[in-house]
Amino acid sequence: MALLELNNLKVHYPIRGGFFQRVVSHVKAVDGLSIQIEAGKTYGLVGESGCGKTTTGRAIIGLNKITDGNVTFEGQDLTKIAHKNQHSLRRDIQMIFQDPYSSLNGRKRVLDIIAEPLRNFENFTKEEERRRVQDLLEKVGLNPEAAFKYPHEFSGGQRQRIGIARALTLNPKLIIADEPVSALDVSVQAQVLNFMKEIQKEFNLTYLFISHDLGIVRHMCDEIGIMYRGRLVEQGNTEDIYENPQHIYTKRLISAIPNIDPAQRQASTQARQQILSSYQQDLNNLLDPEGKPLALKSISSSHQVALP
Ligand SMILES: Nc1ncnc2c1ncn2[C@@H]1O[C@H](COP(=O)(O)OP(=O)(O)OP(=O)(O)O)[C@@H](O)[C@H]1O
Image (cartoon, rainbow, N blue to C red; front, side, top):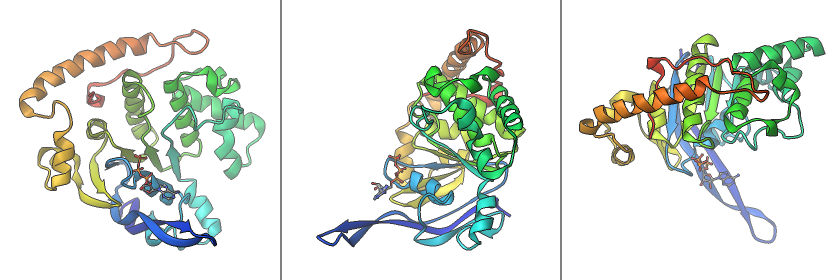
């Protein structure tokens, strides 16, 4: 049984107009989307801006109203179960947002940001809460003292690690990562993506990975779905689709990735190896906000990022 299933999902936004602000039409942001994600896998939802990726992610966690179709998590239809049970099921699904600069509340300490989901679901004492947050900070490679600082005291990559720690607080089964690195510069992108892969095994996570970047998706995902105007035009095993795209739209997207031509691939792989080893050096030299070396894990060869 798939962990998450979308069955003919439709999300239409009403457009209002006229004196009485009546609904005059709809934007069919998602219009009949069906996907299945197996536990422990990463499914990439890919497509150009405006095709409905974010709307899909938000509908799964209940931030957007579903017009039709359903979302099934561990066999339970999220659109049908009682509100109380929805609440407990939704602790198993967390989201990492695109922009680590705006998605963390700048007026709250990191402790309060990461503890927020805990406060909605658990009755932890202040001491238990602090311990849990500081454990998570260590897991994401930050100093536990970061708990008492504010988001503006961290770099973009560090902030995204804080966002990841917040998503991990409740030990979720599924994480929806909506363009998790597109606001970061390329060297930091590699660190965050590799880190997401590392924690996937440790925390037994399943990812729905939303991105417009086919290079990154190829590195991250077991399966992909190519989305166009609210629907899938093609889905399947990532390598199969990259090697042998069937739909004209997929072919166009893939042909637009630099260095995807097999003749050039070997050279670009060597170039990537070189860039990655220099990133590794940068990683080793990374310091936390207090100038101490960060406890980062190394990039293993199986976790290499396809750089542009
Ligand atoms: N609140 C809203 N009201 C009306 N239309 C909306 C709303 N939010 C999104 N849309 C429209 O729905 C469509 C899908 O938007 P969505 O943000 O899901 O796309 P996306 O693929 O995630 O794009 P991007 O990569 O640029 O974030 C777009 O046409 C967008 O303009």
